Length: 55
Image 1 (cartoon, rainbow, N blue to C red):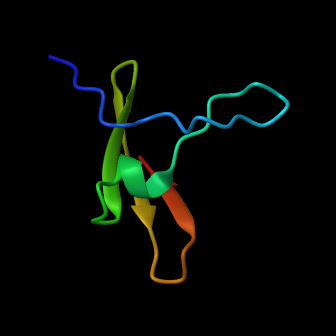
Image 2: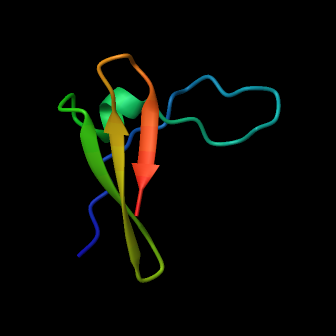
């Protein structure tokens, strides 16, 4: 079962790429899992406000 936890920000940059808010992806707790094919990654927002993506 797949649940869409991200909401797309309504304003997009001129490049028309999808834009997601990291706080929405992590539901405010600073961590989210992202799946790509059969690989699972962890997205983390640091205390300094940086993003880290690890396998």
